Image 1 (spheres, chains in turn green, orange):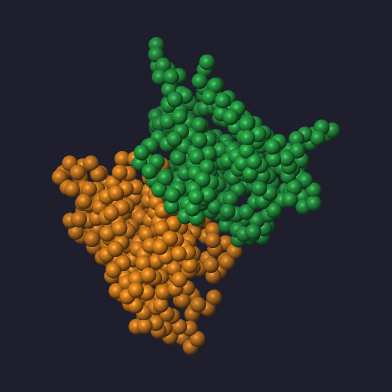
Image 2 (cartoon, rainbow over the protein chains, first blue to last red):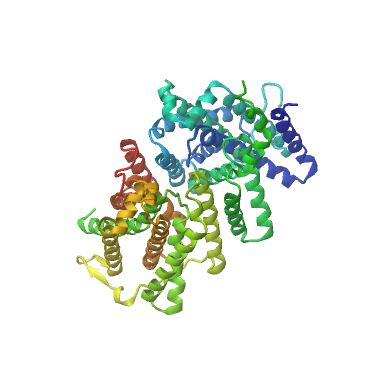
Amino acid sequence: MNRQIVLPLAAVAVLALVPWAGSPFYTELVTKVMILAIFTMSLDLLVGCTGLISFGHAAFFGLGAYAYALLAPKEEAASLWLTLAAAIGLSASAAAVIGALVLRTRGIYFIMATLAFAQMFYFVFHDTDFGGGSDGITVNLRPQASIGMWSGIDLGNSVQFFYAILTLLGATFAFLRKLLASPLGYALKGIKVNEHRMRSLGYPVFGYKLASFTIAGTLAGLAGYLSGVQSGFANPELLSWQQSGNVLVMLILGGSGTLYGAIGGAFAFSLLEEAYSAISVHWQLMLGLTIIALVLVLPGGLGGWVARLVMAPAEEHADDD
Amino acid sequence: MDIGTFFIQLLNSVQYGLLLFLVASGLTLIFGIMGIINLAHGSFYMVGAYMAFSLTSLTGNLATAIALGVILSVALGILLEWALFARLYRRDHLQQVLLTYGLVLVFEELRSIIVGNDVHGVAIPAVFSGSIQLSDTLSYPVYRLFISAVCLALAAGLYLLIKKTRLGMVIRAGSANREMVQSLGFNIKLVYRLVFALGVALAAFAGMIAAPVSSVYPGMGTQVLIVCFVVVVIGGIGSVSGAMVAAMLIGLTDTFGKVMFPQWAGAGIYILMAAILLWRPEGLFRRI
C-alpha cells in the first residue's frame, strides 16, 4: 500500500488511543503538543518549503490567542465560529501586511526584520493596557460550538476537545500536503532552491513568497487560537521572541522541509521537556546537552530520518523515464 | 527636558552604546568572518558579569577580578571553538541556531548550579566611586565615565587591529573569501580561533565592567543578545564601524525613548531597525 497514506493514518490511529490509555493529565498534555505541532507545521511551510527563516512567527500565534481572549465575553461562553473566524482573519491580515514589508529583505536581515515586527507586537501587548498588559487576559469558559439547534461538541470535555484538535491536526497536515503538491507548492520549492532562476523563468517571486508567509501566519494564528482556548488565557509571552525561538528549535530538531519533522519535533521537544523536568530541577542542562548532541550526530534532524523511510521510494523514481 | 537632564541622558546613551558596541563587535566579527550565527553570545556577557561577581568576592578587588576574568574568557573561547564551533563552519544556519540554542540552555543552567539564581551587586571600586558636579543640582557618576573611556579605548584598539595590522588584513580578507585566504597559505583555522576568542573576551569584558552599574542577574544574557543582534543587523554584518554607528543609534533611541515615550520605549529600537531595514535592506554598512 502507498506509504504516504499508511504512515499518517497509523500515526493518527496511535494518537487516537491516548485518551483511553492514560490519565487526563496526558490527554491535556498531548492536546497541547498537537496544537504546538500545528504551529510548527505552519513554520515549516515558511522555513522548510520556501526557505524563509522567520524569527517572529510567534506574533501570529499570539494574535490568534489574543483575538479569542479579547472577544470572549466575561460571563458566558464565546461563540466558537465567531471567535475562530476573527482569529483567522486577524492573523491573515497581519501576516499579509507584515509580509509585504518584511519580504523586501533577505537572509539574516529577513530573520531580524521578522523579529523586529514580532517584538513590536510584543511590546504593544506588554506595555499598554488594552490587552491586559503584562498579565494578559483570562477566559473562564471554553467556547461553545453550537449551530442553530444542534448543540455541537462540548469543548469543555477534555476528551472531546482532544479529538477535535486531533482532527484539526490531521486537516492541517492534509491541507499542507495538498498545497505542497500543487503548482504553488512546487513554485515555493523552486524559490527555496534558487530564487533568481525562478525569477528569470518569469515567476512573480515576491507574490509567491507573500502567499507562503500569509498562509503560514494564518495557520499560526489558528494554533494560537486553539492554545488560547485550551489554556484559557492569552499573555504577551505568547508573542515573545523566546516563543518564536522555541518553535524554530522544534522545527529544526524534527527536521525542516518534511511535515513529519514539524510534528515529530514538536512532540520530541515537549516530551523531552516533560521527561527531563521529572528527573531533575536542572532539566534545561540535560535538554541543552541533548540538543547539542543531536545537532552533531543527526544533521537532518529526527524527521529527516523518518522522512527518508516514508518518502524516499516515491521520490527516488520521480525522474525515471 | 532641561539642558542638564538632556546632557545626562546623552552621557547615559553614549555609555550604553559603547558597552553594546563591545558585545556586538564580537558578534559581528564571528558572523561576518566565520559565518556562524551564535545565539550563545549573550551568555558570554552574562558569564563575564557573574565572573566579576564571584572573582571580586574571592580576590576583594574588581581590577584583579577583571584581569583574571579576561584570561579565563579567552581560554573559554578557545575551548568552545575547538570543541564545538569548528564543526559548525560547514553547517547551515539552522543547525547553528539549534546548537547555540542548546548551548544557551547549558550556560544558563550551569550558572544556576554553580552560582545560583540570585541577583547580585558588584561594588564600584573606591577610586571611581565619586561623582562629577555638572551643575548645582546634577552630578554624574565617575565610574560611568570610566566605562565609556575604557570602551572607547578598546574600540580604538579594535579599529587599529583590523585596519592597520597584518592579522586585521587576514581577518578582513577571510570575511570576503575564506577559501582564497586558505589557498594563499594562511592558517585560517588559527585565525578563526583567535577571532572567536576575541569575541568571547570582548563580550565577557563588557559584562565585567558593566556589572557595578547594571547588577548581575539571570536574564541579562538573553536581554543583551537580542539587542546585539539588532545592532549587528542595523550596522551591517561583518562591519565593525557599522556596529559602532548602530550601537550609538540604539543607545540614543533606547535611552531617550525611555525618558520621552515610556510606553513605547520597549518597541523603540525595533521600530528603528524596521525603518532602517526598509530603507537599506542590508544594513547601513556592508563589510569591515
